[in-house]
Amino acid sequence: MFFFDAARVLIPFIISFAVGIILAPVLAHNLYKYKAWKKKGGKGKGLGDANGTPLFDSLHKEREVSTPRLGGMLVWSSVFVTSILLAVLGIVLGGPYAQLDLINRGQTWLPLFALLVGGLTGLVDDVLEIRTSTGGLSMRWRLLVVAFFGAFAGWWFYAKLGVSSIGLPFFGTLHLGIAFVLVFVLVTLMLYASGVIDGIDGLAGGVFSIIFMAYAGIAFAQNQVSLAALAATISGATFAFLWFNIPPARFYLSETGSMALTLALSVTAFSADSLGDGVGVSVLPIIAFPLFITVLGNVLQVFWKRVFHRKLFRIAPVHHHFEAIGWPAYKVTMRYWIVTILAGIFGIAIALLK
Image (tube, rainbow, N blue to C red):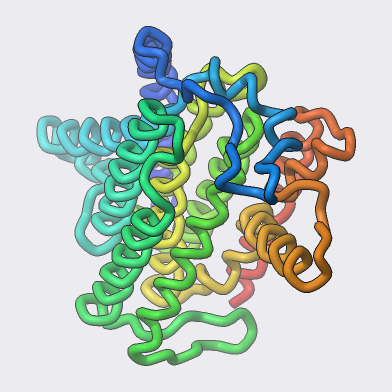
């Protein structure tokens, strides 16, 4: 049974990767055909200090007006194609093939919904950004969508699934009551804020693919096979995106990818927690360490500028700081991959010790 369940997780991973590899050239062709990139490079004077973001612009301005956005469509479209394909295969062939169907109400409906909500909202933002180059949807509207989704998902866990606690390594269960919904919202907002890690070719794709594979391992160990299969499917699709995103990137993940992945990751982490008698949320800062550091670095940068009237980092997010001090982009990316692998292994170990 162990090997059969393992196959139920690994087969969708391979299929989603293959689907992504097949779809990518079609997507790239159309993105270049319709020039799906910003028409004006740089962040402008709406961000950064009084002079805008000159250091960031010097590092990335040219690439922004020649490399398409919307690459994140490859991730969530590959996941949905794979999920539907396996569901149809199960219906037509039945028998053991029916066990490959990873769509079920108890474990994967909500993560798939999260992927859809994030993907479509990000798609709107990217299309507006491409047309106007003025920032797309306002941050207020994006945060409202993320907060509303977090509140809905937290309520669903609390009211429909009866979940009101999170697991803590070595300490058992932390009961939160209705405050569970607030914690869900805060975690979802934090993860969304970490989406700015999509700033160097290959960086976000590698980090997210490793994180989701780590959660696939945790869910599998908790006998949440469908959730593990979905996390592996997302990982496989993200690896396919990464194949075309390593330097020089054919397209960027952008908001339609980062929002989809961060919302899905939030639901996956909570699903791999009390529902599986595990510690999915409390190990999130470990497994997603690069995402956590990205958010923390931004917070510290703002704090330093307001309190000490100078920058802590030459540029934030912190991965751009490493570029600014002379690290080649590929070195930053590969070191982030290494850190994510190590953090993922450590996080899995902690989760399994519960």
